[in-house]
Amino acid sequence: MPADRPKPASPTSAGGAAPCRLTLAPGEQPETDLEVRRSHFLARAERADDEDAARSFIARVRSRYPDARHHCSAFIVPQPGAAPGSPAIERSSDDGEPSGTAGQPILEVLRGSGLTGAAVVVTRYFGGTLLGTGGLVRAYSEAASQALAAAARVSISERALWEVRVPVARAGHLEAELRAAGAASGALAVEGTSWGASDAVVLLSTPVGGPSPDDLIASLTAGGAKPAPVGTRLVESPLRPPA
Image 1 (cartoon, rainbow, N blue to C red):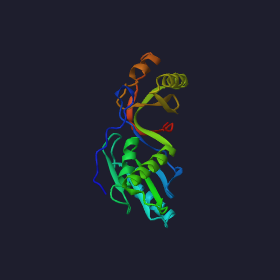
Image 2 (cartoon, rainbow, N blue to C red):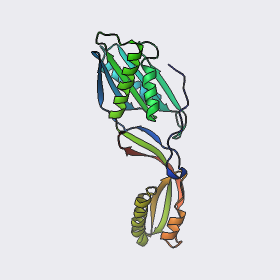
Image 3 (cartoon, rainbow, N blue to C red):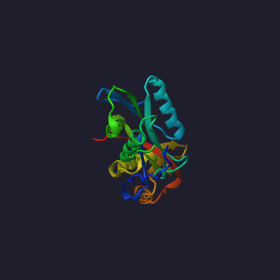
Image 4 (cartoon, helix red, strand yellow):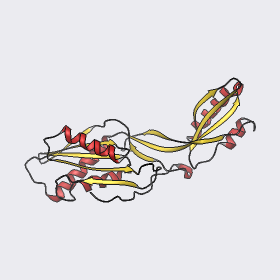
């Protein structure tokens, strides 16, 4: 298998915010079947957040089709504990096909997709006709492309968390104003409100690296409240499938 290669930086959100990671949605994805001169290339993509998950997925596909001769694969997964945008781990396997005709083409398709935390396995049932080196490269590339096109995708971004403490009597109105502001900007989100006897705490999130909500809170509370940073968390958002 090839050595690890650094991945290009992940896409960044507007305003210079922290990079997000594009990956597949959790759960089982559709399987595709590409027929080329009576050979069948069964392809499936799956979310894999680390190398162990990727190898487990490959093993499951192999056990599902034990009579197939080739289970060619590739995956790109994040380094353990790495933030979105960090260099990734890349692996591929030809699994008995001529060197460079299967695993590497699948990996190239994965690279082109911009996904990290994803694995693709293409199982081949031989149809009796040799495809040649170029034919294999094209078939495995197309099979991988079909599997990724059929799979649901999400973006993972790191968001900063903020707490805003206000009197209980003001909290409901402030939360509604913040939700409206978030809907208008597409950046700020209200994560919830904790209610106490006299005070309430509204929890907000914004993109890491983006503007703080200080000015907005000051405007909405006439300077009576200030957001306090309380850490970050990763948030997954569904994406429309590629055209």
